Length: 225
Image (cartoon, rainbow, N blue to C red; front, side, top):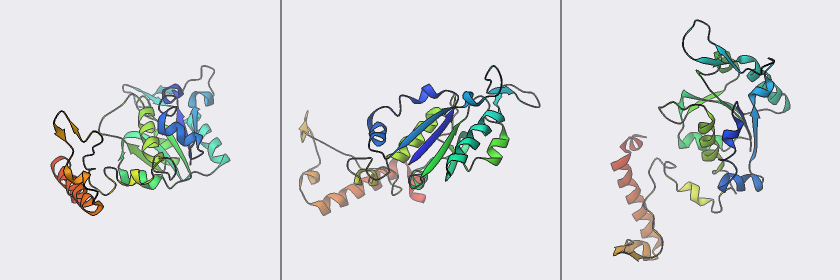
């Protein structure tokens, strides 16, 4: 998978992709990640990327021209299945969307700032708008990092155990069951006996029951699905 991220603050994205699973995904060739500085495509002498909004009001708007130039350049080099805009008023990111995006080949992600981008970008270029929650961040970079991480980990070969992602919370509209590791007893706190039984069938039944109960208690809205 190739992902191109368009931003005015590329340094914000250095950390999330330079370690752990995302780093290994790139080293293994499962992820080709490119971060583009929108400011490099500004046509003004001062390399401006924002201006006052028409109609007045507080807050600046990301200019249409440098974003358009950059998107056109990338689209001229390859086709993109999705051009995503990170915005608080986009669709709320859910596991089903991550599963869908993990099957794509080329994705472009535009990070918003200020009051947002000139709406003509959204009208003529953007194919999907995504939010990671009902709150506002300073920019779309952290949201873009969340999208990339949640999608790339689903690509076969990225995780050492490919079945791990299939048992994550939300994959089957249930929360994951509780998990335990060694030692079997610590400070008098014991691991449930069923997990030590070696009976795979009973263990799976127990995990399903625990998932169902945890979902009822913490996220009953998921059961409506």
